[in-house]
Length: 599
View 1: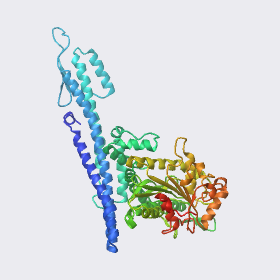
View 2: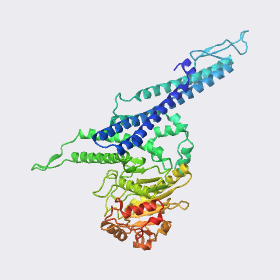
View 3: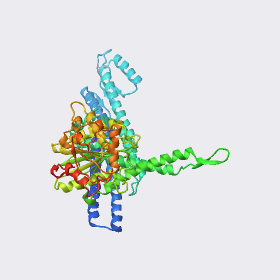
View 4: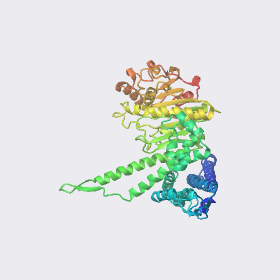
């Protein structure tokens, strides 16, 4: 970049362009929300038939377009702000060098060279003449300049060299910024069609990575999240960021922001939806490539020509099943987004997502905004829960996502006019095998710190949004109740054992304690229910393998909590619509204790 260009450069023009792209990103986000949360909802509730279904499908595709626009324009805005930051740093150095030159009676020429006047002691009746010097940035050349300055008879020579070197360094820095950002900005160009493909989302993730690498100076100027901070520290950090700084962090670090406990639900949801879309694109492309490279299924084994499965095919098939299972879970999350409005379902908030996190995958999905709800219930599923099955009904038994939805619906009936949020929390490695894994405490012990931090984060986010903690219930099904017990034990001496108002369990094999009070839980706010058939076997089995302290589980009177009536005919039937079990859960969630039917 030449001297005149940098001297006359207005970095505010780039910042205005960045503001423009940010405004487009915000408008796209608003349009996406309008399509998903209002227009589609009204269509579902007022129209039916094949034409309506086709229209809804088109609206979902249009919402994808707006989401992609939102993400890419957010990246562009950050890129332009980062470019402006880099150029402004160079321009500030140039302006400072020019000001110092003018203060020393030097003249900066149009090409960036510096002219100095005559000066110094006369020699043979003549004053040392003036001249013009060009700056250098090479260290060897700069050393030679310094030597020349020491012996030059004109004192202005040394000052001119110093200013010229500074000007040249500023121009070089600006040139490097220009050369760095020009190709990055050229790459931020979408296809000229209206279809957002898997490849588009993969490209969007690459765009983000490229901009993030180049935007180090700009991002470093933004205060980073507290290292090893607790949820309250995270909430405080977020509170003091400007809107532009928040947008930059969501654009550049969606996975980190989406996983940060204590941040507002809408910020985490925006970040995680981006991660979901980009990850889904990656997995779809990997699966498509894998399907094109299927090796032979069988190979000869032994001299008789017997056939057996080839190891290459088995490895290929395993990878294929893995990708298909993860994509199935991602589709289940999308299906929940698409169900907004069905049976009055509120907007969904994706508070955590990682398809391979914690072994089984990480999914935290809320019905309604927990930050502003009067009542919040966090549901922790048990054995065999995996991202691939989290949205899958097991016969007549509703899926883990549906259980939270049904609980939301029943709770809303008991508390009309009050906001309710129910959350499915899968952020631990749930046991995969009932007999081999679920008899051990190690899975609950490992996941307990994560649950405790999430509960603390839920409280902090609610506190910052409303000024109060709200009313929170943490509910564990089966092995999920064991996790709650370990969560109470993992709390340090100055922390609340369970950062919630109510603890409720269903089909619990034990909470690693003989009494609710042993876990720091007020027995008045400890609730338990059991079911028939296989649920009875789970509870008795928990006593025998040691998950219940002193062979005691929460449905035993010795445990000290409230035992509620249940008409669940099996281990997964506590959420059947219209059941006594579901109504009792809703009564606890909404604080309507007088409506609880005790056993």
